[in-house]
Image (cartoon, rainbow, N blue to C red; front, side, top):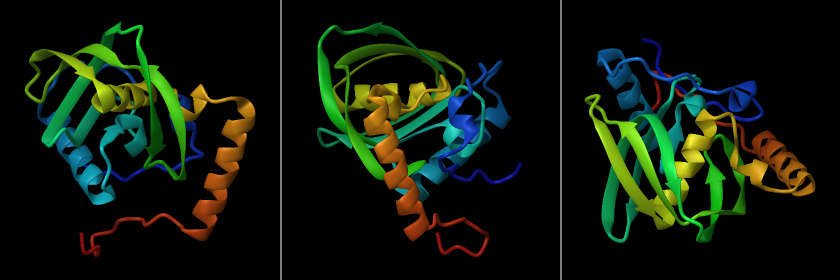
Length: 179
């Protein structure tokens, strides 16, 4: 299996819908493990599979909230309930370096998914965890956080990101990396 790498925008994969995973088997678990590895190397909170070049419905999350470490691997995640109450957080993405934006999303969600072992799980999430889950599932649906902004604001941020990437080229990981 080829080692997963972070995919950077602009890239057509961010507009493609990921396909459902048929069964959680050793291959899928190996992908999840690699996604967590990329997440740790890049010091992120979450990854949708599109962000590492996969069109499979997989999300990984590893973050701290309220002094508690939250780690989830979600296969075929589906948000089945959204609250009417909303919240605003500054969102960014490892695949869209150098930019961020305030995004309004539902404050609470209920998400159904298969865990690392293929068991069905249900999670009620609120606050920042809710935002992170929604952000990552958006990737699986061919949507990015910038889609919640006006075209003018989105275009401005994409231009800012392109300038950032030009001045700070992304690190491509090789077997010779020290991490």
